[in-house]
Amino acid sequence: MKAEFVKEEGNPTGNGDPDTWADYIVEQDYDGYSDENHETWKLLFDRQSEIVKNRACDEFFKGQESLGIDNSGIPNFDKVNEKLSASTGFEILPVAGLIPNLPFFKMLSMRKFPAGNFIRKKEQLDYIEEPDVFHDVFGHVPMLSDPVFADYVEKFGHGGLRANGFNMIDQLARLYWYTVEFGLMKTAEGLRIYGAGILSSPGETVFSLENPSPNRIGFDLKRVMQTNYRVDDYQQTYFVIESFAKLFALATQDFAPFYEEMKADPKLYSLTDMLDSDKVLTHGTQDYAKSRDAEKA
Image (cartoon, rainbow, N blue to C red; front, top):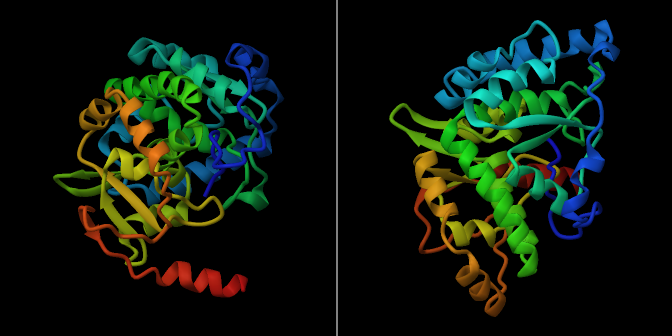
């Protein structure tokens, strides 16, 4: 599992000033990557490409192909952006690490996506705390070539800036987490992955779809914004959308009434809560989470 740009409560990066977004942009320094860096990309790419077969959504594979993201080495952002900008108007911009919430939202609202310019070491193939170039470019960027999903991400950016005025940043963080990072889609071929946090994780790719442990619940906007999540392990609940069009339609709603409801009743559902109103696809056993918690006890 990878760290996210938008942190849960107590975000150590703070909210920041949206007008400072450009201060976080650095050079990709493509010529500075070593042969070992490119080899690490190839190892990660080849392994994960096999695992996501028949598990990722079609839009992911189409995006990879159209943008030329392959195993030949760490992608050059400038070259990727030529194709990405032409398809959806998005561009990826290199950053050195996590950035505060509001500059992040501002970037998304401008169709700019911050991507780590560094790559993990070979001993970190399975896990790295901060999102690196593999998580961001392998996991996120192909999805940004889909017009409807790109519209959703831009809309999320505008919504994040507005949420700050309602003191609802944490609620938007959960929406981002359960869609852009850890979202599942119901298709005619079965459940498929579109969330980058899953797509870039070999273990969670299989776990999210095939393990009996987690809950899988039909997407409900308010429910998602009131549900906690795990930052240190596989998720215990996944929310399933039916299409990007429906996800975008939900995101175009006026969130103000939801915010007022949550202020009046600020409940936060646990990782395992199941509600009578939930559309349950899988009522998970939670065996994995219980075993991991026992190990930590």
